[in-house]
Image 1: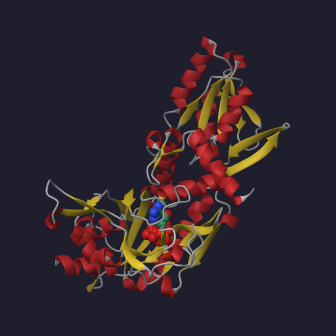
Image 2 (image 1 turned 180 degrees about the vertical axis):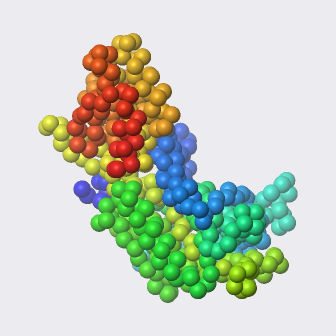
Image 3 (image 1 turned 30 degrees about the horizontal axis):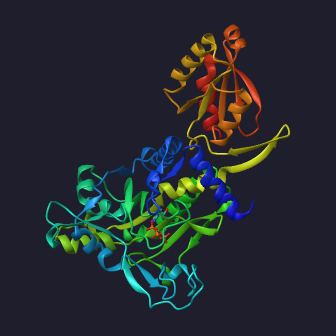
Length: 435
Ligand code: ATP
């Protein structure tokens, strides 16, 4: 499939089926902002849940927080963001477009002119004012990353949860960056969502944990169905490292336009705790009672994007095939990511079938996100479910009324199986577990 073809198809499917809409479309859209529709918000939630399960739920050494988005300038002054969170901005003198210098090769992508201004540092933080007076004393920033929430709460979390390194603090939430050139659909937007974790370790163990975490994170995407051929780890060169990093490895995905970052796993050293310690005067060191050693922990940070990951999962899942001579479009999404794990389709609108279908819906929706569709032919309904990635469809037919069994149709193979209603939930649990 042509590169632009795949992007066009994903963008169009996302809008047509209610995954992602251009925000404020009735007003002509608003500057690369997007709204997530019924299926998109279900899928976003599944991406978050899959991360949360792996990073928080299944681990005894990681705890979650939920920090505020509005934040004090003192945080960003100490963290270095006020001085360093900049992108190099250039203007095209010919057509007046503005670009991020490191994204173009000295030539304006709009008009082809190389008559560009010198690059100047553009700070990407969104600035606002808290309260009715717009003066220096009331400045606030929308956080450009969730990470600082973990650093400024480090001591409160460590003490209240009685933790000892190695341990992690994780959170999921929105971040805001005034990107010079947002684009490629939701790959780069000014408002987006992050899933980040700071894993605090003894400095001598930092390298070991860094390796551990970038491998874990690579495997997370792999286990959720991204093919190995579309995924790689890339080590940053020295010149590329952020101001806080002693080493960064990116998990990259093969986007239609080439390899791009999905997630960065950085060894942030003790940069942030040190910086906040100095700026706030609070002692953020850790005293190990066993070894009688006092030290400032290093932080290993896996930093991922919810919205960017969702886009990658959609791109990796998109497929077209031919079934019984009919072309179909499908999303081969992992059942943990698909908006609906299962959809219930009564063969007709006859009340006796609807009754059973409703009971199945109620029962399954205790554990799963369940779709329901009773309009048009069953063939068309299967196609609609394929297009939104529903891995299993349960069909209730007249036979069901006699034998208490339903037909389960598998999205990928289109094969069908007869399963007793009483065993349905268990059947699905095993299928999802072993996917
Ligand atoms: P880039 O180099 O692409 O600007 P970054 O290295 O600045 O990204 P990080 O600060 O490491 O990104 O952020 C961690 C993750 O947050 C990224 O890997 C990405 O998934 C997500 N992310 C960052 N910026 C954006 C954005 N503008 N839109 C959507 N997701 C983003």
